[in-house]
Image 1: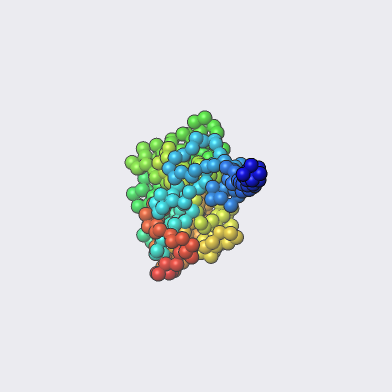
Image 2: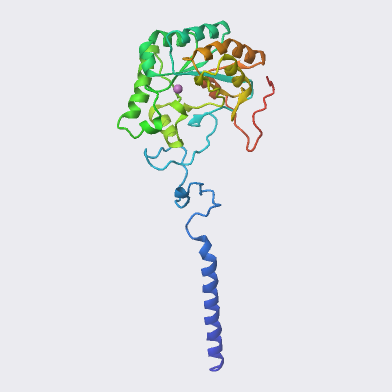
Length: 299
Ligand code: NI
């Protein structure tokens, strides 16, 4: 007994050391540092090491690191560049007005065709042409906020009171002139990020609207080029398709001149024009990994 005891003790010690060494090896890769293949890891090296629990409704304080953009359910997203719909619906949008002569011309073109569009207006232009904004509303178009001075909001955000002037003052003027507060905003230059878009929704009550078709009409390429780019797309910008949000500007002559032929061609293809808010209301849940929108009534 006395001779076997040391052997047993030795075995126990060796086993203990082996277990310790093994557990040390297996513990190493499961440190509380997020692994690069973890769902919490992001491509951003700063966030990769920080355990961030994504949240769908809390907007973290401004100026901090931007959160993961959480894809929302239909109608619950903070920003849109197109909408998944089951029919041939598209939204034409016109920015930077109202313009004293071109916007009334465009309104005539739209009225003839019974087409409703969305105008993203500048506070400074509404102040100059309130009667044109009233006409836009009276003729069934939607009004969106495009800020007061057309500055990039991603820069304005660091200025004390900057967002209040650019966003809240513009909404207040639109409400004063038209009787309705806008529920959508298009950031100038499309300059936003998930944090800013969420803050615009939570603090100012507006969804952020970008676009899926961009004809670069502000460079005045000519009416036929604007028309072709909207219908067929160009560069990385696809052409009109169901659920598209088409960007253009009612302060450029060539854009307004392009509209009769562009709108007629879209109508001939079977498209139905809706305002941006109507398009969002038509949004359907997108099944996981489904191909892009293939509506039954394809135009
Ligand atoms: Ni603009």
